[in-house]
Picture (tube, helix red, strand yellow):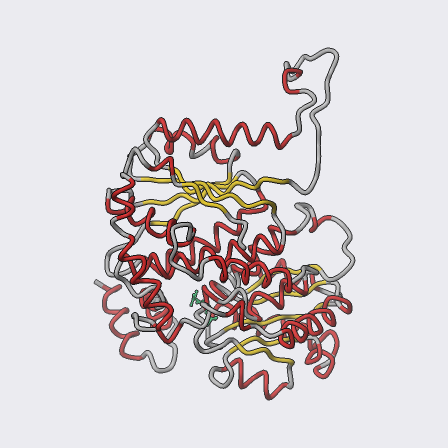
Amino acid sequence: MGTIKLNNADVLGAVSAADIESLQHAAEAAVEKLEKGTGEGNDFLGWLHLPSTTSDALLDEVEAAAAQLRNSCEYVVAIGIGGSYLGAKAVIEALSDSFAAYKPSKGAKVLFAGQNIGEDYLYDLQELLQGKNFGIVVISKSGTTTEPAIAFRFLKEMLEKQVGKAEAAKRIIAITDASKGALRKLAEEEGYKTFVIPDNVGGRFSVLTPVGLVPIAVAGFDVKALVEGARAMEAATANADADNVVMAYAKTRNALYRAGKKIEILVNFHPKLHYVSEWWKQLYGESEGKDHKGIFPASVDDTTDLHSMGQWIQDGERTIFETVITVEKQARTLVIPSDEANLDCLNYIAGKRVDEVNKMAELGTRLAHVDGGVPTMVITMPEISEKCLGELIYFFEKACGVSGYILEVNPFNQPGVEAYKKNMFALLNKPGYEAESAAIQAKLAK
Ligand code: PA5
């Protein structure tokens, strides 16, 4: 039984219950396409039953490899981009102490690289790692992506200089395709520990494979509980019945899109969920934004962003809807103290938990936005834990597949991502891109 709840009552000013229910047939057809593998992109459906088919043996192997790095290194750098980065980053940030970077830790601290080509970023990282005991988890499904390849070249060389080639090889884990790509070849030649990204799982659906599980385990979190949560959601959404939360979310957002609500803002009131939104944006952006269609996925971290984006959301163009992730129980308790002088005039909330104030800010915001013409859905999760995050991840993944098919796009490809790469390779004179290089230079010379 999943514990994630969805409430879509506050969209009813913008679309009717009948508008949403009119998509029931399309949602059922979408579920059938996923289950039978008869839709577009059906060679990338490995994520659908991944939680229930992930073996304990694989989870044990992930934990053992991760423990080795965690216990022997001060820092472990997870190198990857897009789907090979965001899932691990989202779960680690959500579960970590907000100031973990500045506090001593029991095991290795996980850092990220290869998710940008920032020269200063790489320089600063190398400066931090100079003379430190560090390891690397390099992740690339294709094994050829430029950003992680650059970062890995620098950090591999640095590690080999610091500890020698043989010891460096023991501190590098490579996660890539079973047989293809430069990273697979390199890993085999150098003798790294490797994990396979299944062929039928695309990058943005891969957080519950070793792509996400290894860095999450290195950071000290319970990957078995994460998978257990995903299994619970897989079971809870297996049937196309009335309380199927995945179908309800997919139908509601498509009904809103058809009613002109082209932008979905994922809202949280918990700073630790910032990267969950970043992961969600990639999942929905790359899955649905094609054929000149698709809801634009945006996000805000409230109450922070109420002081920057709040005005627009309350009063700007009415093409948006919000999906608020609310967290019932906080991990910590903090009560606002009373102050005799009360110069800050805050005694009216003295004795209340900080979370109670946050919850009232959340409710007040939701009511104001609904009054202002922003249809709002609410996703409730009991707490931020491995199990609940596992549920949430699977919820969003399955809803994305259903929603993409309702929208009549192939949710499992990303042809548009290649356009920038082609231009970049042409501009950098990559071998094999001679014609593109000539064409782009001619275009720039005009
Ligand atoms: O979702 C996707 O497929 C992409 O975002 C990829 O994950 C991203 O481009 C990284 O690719 P790779 O893992 O092949 O390096």
